[in-house]
Length: 266
Image (cartoon, rainbow, N blue to C red; front, side):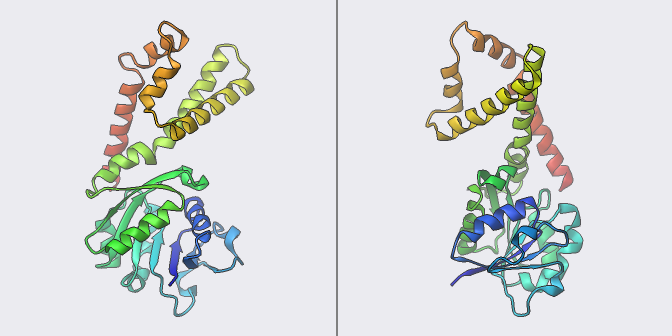
C-alpha cells in the first residue's frame, strides 16, 4: 500500500519536501493545493495533481497524510474546509508558532504532529524536530519521521513547549550562520581584502567548516581546539570572541530572545 499525501502550500519548503518524497516509491499519489505558482515545477509530473483550491481536489482522493505548509497567518482561514478530510488522516504541520491546540481547534479531534524544519531542507540537509498529540499512533509518528527524513535529520520531543527552543536554535539558526559569513566578509574588507575575495573566503570557510563538523566524530569544541595553536593568530581572535560579552554570551541571549518571541507568536 502506498501512502497518499495532500500538500497544502507548495512554496520553497513544501516544494523541497515534495521533491524528496517523489524519490520514494512507497509514497504517492500526491495532490498539492497552492493558490500561487509555487507548484509550477511539479505540474504535469506523474503522480502529482496540482490544484488552486480545495474544491478542485479530485473526487474520492482520501489522503493518508495532510501536510500543512502554508504561512502561519493564513491558517485560520485555510484549515477549516479540510476538517472532514483530516478526520481519517495524519495532519503534519510545519507552520511556525501554530500550536497543536490551534490545529485541533480548526480541524477537530484528529491526529496532529507539529514539526519545525529549517531552510537547509531545501537541499536535503535540514533538521526537523517533531511533537505529536495523543491521537497520533506510532505508525503515524513513523510516517512523520519518514516524511521529514526526506529533507534531512529528524528528532522528537514530548513537550510541545520545547518547540520554541528548537525554533530558536535550528529554525532560526541558519540566519545566525549567514550573519557570521556576512560579518566575516565585512571584517575581511576592513582588513584590506577585496569584497569579492573576502566574500569567497567567508562563504567557503563557513560551508567547509560546517561540512567538516558534519562528517567528524569529534565535538565542535574539539574541532575548535584543533585549529587553535596556543599564542597563535586563532587564539588571539578567540580571546575576543569568547571573552566577556562575546559570541557565546550573544548567542545565548539571541536564542532566548527568539524563544520568547516564539511563545508570544503562539
